[in-house]
Figure 1 (tube, rainbow, N blue to C red):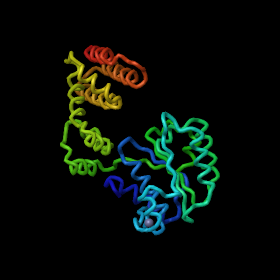
Figure 2 (cartoon, rainbow, N blue to C red):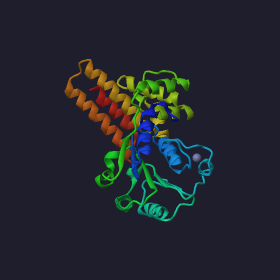
Figure 3 (cartoon, rainbow, N blue to C red):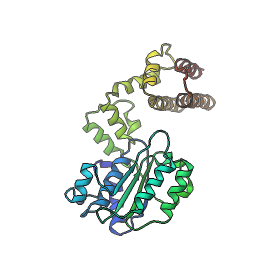
Figure 4 (cartoon, helix red, strand yellow):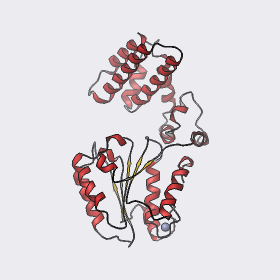
Length: 295
Ligand SMILES: [Zn+2]
């Protein structure tokens, strides 16, 4: 497996492959940055490969060559275009599934972030899941499994993708020359997220966010913090995670539970404002948060 912490899952999947128990609808859930996309890509290649061993494609056959070129006619990726996956996207899936395979083998559909399906899209997908054709496979991923309808969940084999041995993630991150920071352990479940920050030259920014979170109560000038979150709204979540972590430490150190709850609520409110309020005055929101946390 490409990522060492996914070896256990790979082994389980290989076993069900070998026993012919591989279900046609597979749902992979797990946090952002745990490796779901890579896992599903590997599985799809193995399902299409003419001489796969377990869940490993051979890399040599015609199918593997087509996959390497990104032009395999029996593989279909549903890409989220905008906010949601609509019923038309799923109609294309059914259409794709109903035609015979170009390589006389399996056909595979990958739906990334499948929780983004609209209700009608989910209903349309249900038909495909309920009436499976032989040699047709649906590989779904999500980082918000609770948003999926129970009807979809009950018709898929579910795999929780997680870092079961954090030491493996730790070593892997060290191999990327990522320096151990006080916040790094919070992302041992999301090693690829940290790698993405490294690739985007954002590690220093994350350091800054951590510092802001530890010093928010004393701080008065939040302009750098506001700039960071304005530039990349995803980082609001990281900042709130750091704040929550600080708060937990304070609770352990003897903070009153009442105060803890109030502070936690202020962080939740701040995060919701960041993600849901269009044209939010972020400077004001940060000042208010700092004020709430000071009390
Ligand atoms: Zn092959």
